Image (cartoon, rainbow, N blue to C red):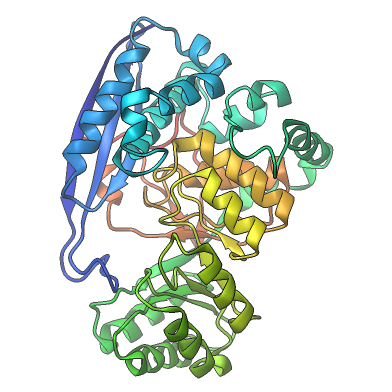
Length: 407
């Protein structure tokens, strides 16, 4: 039984240009953390990610949601979690502050992820195994499909899961091989050209075969020059992505892509405002075959549905510490599977929980295992930090979601 819940406003200045992009020049990587304590001495940890200021407000909202779990057993909660989560997200006064976005949705992510962590710990298994062990109906009961059934019915979701179940064994080798990663930290926005070049060499030596550069300068020629620098340093065999972090207009996004046609970019990420679904579609049509990647700041399954329906994203970057946690992440993964769009999450948790979710996506839903973003700057703050070897995530083996923070 859950006896009480606490929160922690955890902020980690990372300095030295780390984490910088075209919009967020001096981030303070932060977690609004929820802790669910039960009568067996177990604690479930849930995270939502922010960049500093306002993190305390997310914690306050999470406290409001978490109070409704007191006195309940986690098995009872998770047996019908989809309905419970919908009840929380539709709480009349908090819903006005969203709905289903902003700090109240981040708070719901924190509490939801704490529930999944406690459930996995109580069952003594890592999250990926808990998810794989659930029957189809048990899994569906943890999800809220409200507002998306015009694009994905419950029956279609059931069929996607059941259809992939028969071939799971052909994909389980990834548990031993490790999930491939890509390196975001080669090219933060405030890094000098020399530092970027050195980071590319270091990343290649560590076994990464895909890398990402931050772009979005007012002077696009700077970004074109730096993209060429990375391509030359990395070679033609490395997949190269760029991320504008919402900074550009539609015309600027297309102009950059035209100027870098010869660089064979894999994707252009967050080129413009994340609410502009049709703008992303315009860009996607203009820059093909370069893909548009989006999702870091897309807050809920309804907007993801719209992106997918409009053909406005070719890479779905849903983040389980931005949408309403593991449960909404899984609904979006199912939507993306129906639309034939790969899921490559943004790792607001630095890969801790997402290393579990991409294993589930690949094994249980037959999503292609392309790669998962890797950012190392918070590893020291976790009791079970992600492990990377030869550019691949090592499969976590301890119970839970790997999100327990050091004191």
